[in-house]
Amino acid sequence: MPPLQIQIKHSGKSYPLTLDTDLPPAAFKDAIYQKTGVPVERMKVMVKGGVLKDDSSWSKIAPKEGQTFMVIGAAGDLPKPPEKPIVFLEDMDDSELAAALAKPVGLANLGNTCYMNATVQALRAVPELQIALAAPSLQSTTPLPTALRDLYAQMSKTTDSIVPSRFLGVLREVNPQFAEMDRSERTAAQMFLGKQGYAQQDAEECYNAIINTLRNVPGLESSASASSSASGSGPSTISSSISRSAIATSSTTARGPAALRSVATGAEAAIGQKRFVEQWLMGEMRRELKCDESTDEPPVVSTEQVLKVDCNINMNTNFMLSGILQSLDEKITKHSPSLGREAVYTQKSRMSRLPTYLTVHMVRFAWRGDIGKKAKIMRKVKFPEEFDALDLVTDELKNKLLPASRKLKEIEKERFERRKVRARRKGVDAPAAAAAAPAAGGDVEMSDASELTSPVKEVDEFDHRERESGEYEKLVNESVKKDVGASETGLYDLVAIVTHKGAAADAGHYIGFVKKSVFHAQQKPKITPTLLDDMESDEDWYKFDDDKVSVFPREKLGTLDGGGEDSSAYVLLYRSKTA
Image 1 (tube, helix red, strand yellow):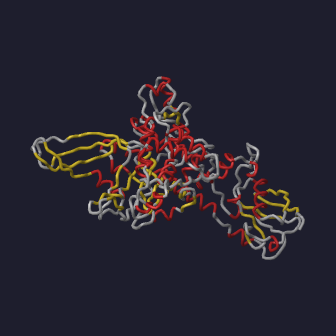
Image 2 (cartoon, rainbow, N blue to C red):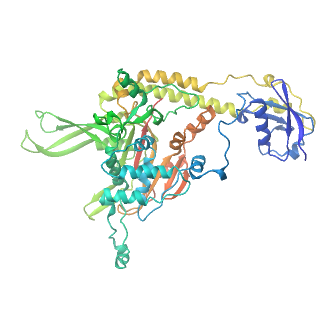
Image 3 (tube, helix red, strand yellow):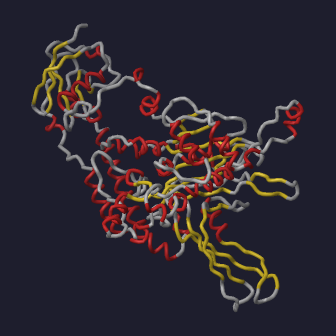
């Protein structure tokens, strides 16, 4: 059928339009959007029989030359031409294609290297690390930071899986334990033939080894802090203003990647600035050791820096928090100087500093003396997607974090309610308009949309968030603001998981999981209210099974709690939340 010249009517105005019935209804809606500025998701086009849907058939609707269609929906700004010319996929190079498709790539297994692959993928959930590694003059006593930087750069510029042979070689050079050969019975025949392979390693040990090797990587500094220091006004937090072209979601840190710079080459690097790991990944633990058998012996208080908190698992552990608290409150037997003999002590440990990225180690492997080797603890232990760590901190730190923490909970609740309102508006039907459509053919003559639906003022989400961020910033403790990389609230989102599959401690398979929203933030798209809702409601994950990458639904996270030989959460990475 040749194209038809028709009319569309919106808000009392008529517009001429060409209708090509060889194209789907979605193309017609897009043409209406170009004329009226009504976004497709808010648009209702009245046709014979009701509302035009994307799967409607033009043959059943039977439009006629000169027919008038009524359009209902609140108009926004008219679409603007793209700032950059449109480039088709077939014309893109590998790096442009990787950015356009946005799906992260996997890492090839080079022979029992799943432990390394899962760890490297999990650390991609720390975008600040890639900023620190990309410093113009990265200084380190080992080649591993440079190798990791190059690997991440390579992973961001291709859509094909990567063979991480160079990084693996550097890892084994720096940490010889990962170059151990497999001497198990199952490889005896291969050893006889001279084909002995490398042994399986522990992913948590690999995680610790990589982090420890990165300890010399220079730290980051917020841009506002740098400018205020230069002006002599002292450190301060970055600006919390929210731009309509770039807005941070609630799970993004206040000192996010866009507001940070490396101090690798500046004078700051030489005057005792904290290193990256110390800033963003390391907490401080206060330990108090008190003798249970002597009231005269004063308690011994010490502090130490920690890269993780352990979740001990026994027959009574059902939840991650209880396992962590069990590891923080321990009974120890040691020599008592006041009693001159062995005595029982109580050690109470609490965090006096929370980092932006909190690592939780599920202690699933324990030494069994009866069999003379490590064994896996299969027990099911539930872990939360959102974690309130204030139960783990000292009273002093809790008092500092509590005001901002309470405010953030209020803000998140209000944002959730606003998202629900916007979702309802998108899905609102127009039953009165549909009833007014004729049952048979002919022109669709209807009253103006304002007579059928009451106008609703569009909520400006950006204005809301700018106000909320200002209120939140006033409640953040000043000493915490100055501590770049420290958590401001003690509230965390789960962003990465390393799991172990199998029953044996020295075998099995490791898989990495990273939340999809982590990669959304790194793409830095132009934010609209609709895109913001989509990003914040996207709770699915990427599953990195070596070179196989797939989407892992949020609803299946509960299957990683353990309880059998299938994948069990082993290392959990949480990111601090802010407004």
